Length: 100
Image (cartoon, rainbow, N blue to C red):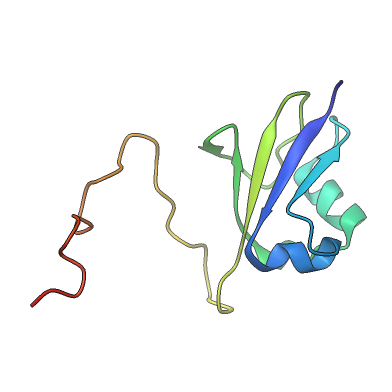
């Protein structure tokens, strides 16, 4: 079975009847898929394919898992994304959130 699997995260599900996963034919670009499904391009802030962030013009390939993250709160730019190998860096140590 060919094609790519699309995982919709956040409010993007509202465009496809609440579904969070879709199987689509390979060979189309992400914008072509978005247009075909009626999803506004500006509603997508991040595109991750097989664990790596990709550009908006990425062409879907057989076996791809494509995660589309919704823009949250109508902000003016893309949201920060954890880059592979950076988990646990920064101020996100357990027990430190909200402590005085």
